[in-house]
Length: 337
Image (cartoon, rainbow, N blue to C red):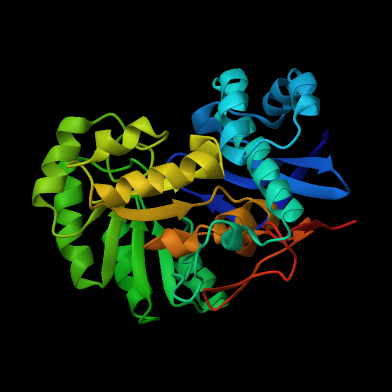
């Protein structure tokens, strides 16, 4: 098996701002694995919050090329277990590698990935579209630019309720709120009351990741469901979040790829928690991988490709929140020339 590493700077349509940062370019690493005339693709993007860069991921993958080249026909689960032993310090790099291998495995089997897993796509959830923090006028403008059935609104400002109040005047779409650790317990409980009246479906990660006492209070008293993001990174965090959150938002980069993400989804369901997968502004390579998990999810945030000025691949398409799959096997991805 041969590995090819490519780096890209994905340009965004608009500067993207959350409670702790703003950016206009998203560095990304694409992994291609080649075997028996097939190629599989995986992606992971840089993330300052998790101290991950494209260069560090590339360096860590280059160090294990002998292992990668020695792999023959292991299942994705077997491959992930071996790769995790070598990359447990860099789960973003492991994600790109795992997704590429899983894609390759499905293509060699002659199946789309959801078919390989035995999933039915008849009742897939729709994806939301994210509105980053900006002036109220610009947030309204971004929303009007792309009418959508579900919006995920980034908050964590002094004008949060005013923002949502104004946005509500222009649409009857479902609202989801992501404060990215930007609120306190009193702010969360007070805001939840106002936001519920404004048609908000749930709140995502209002408190700092390690504020477990605060999470317990919010879980008990909030009038809106609370979804964990920064508090739920790897598999062990699922049970940790039980009785502190109503659901979890899994990011493939954080947990190490599709293989552990599927186990996290299954564990969450056993605990009676809602399941969600989110993106990190990946290209169609990363977003197409997420698409094959849809049959197992309650919610999904896979709008990364809608935020890009230019994409680097073809694969899934999104129309009015609905995901349309590629005709190709695996995740259905092809890199543009």
